[in-house]
Length: 121
Image 1 (spheres, one colour):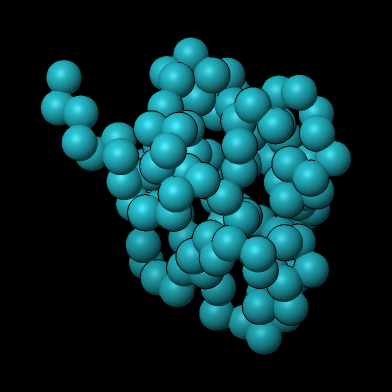
Image 2: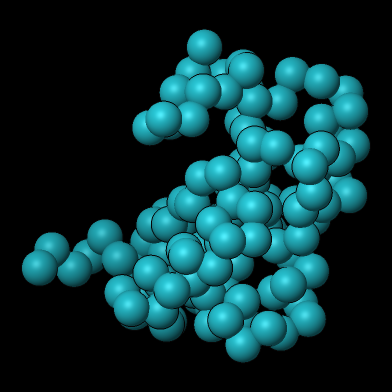
């Protein structure tokens, strides 16, 4: 059994946050086939979640069948990231993941993703 903090996962199979694919419908289909220990949402903008933009809210959509679920946030502002993490937990996230590996320009040009790893302070 795999554990992430206090969260016990039924299997060690994780569905990664695949940009453009990991909406609720896709996660549900994967779960119906079985074996998924944790499924993750698509990459989420904490600003979009906090402003209530339709796209962000749709990407973060979850339900009782979609548990446990991770919500992955990207960004670089610590205060906004913290507010986004609180939002995610209040809206069903079992685990909150901070994206620190995405090399895509739209993320790194805003100092998020893999760019976070270049600032050692």
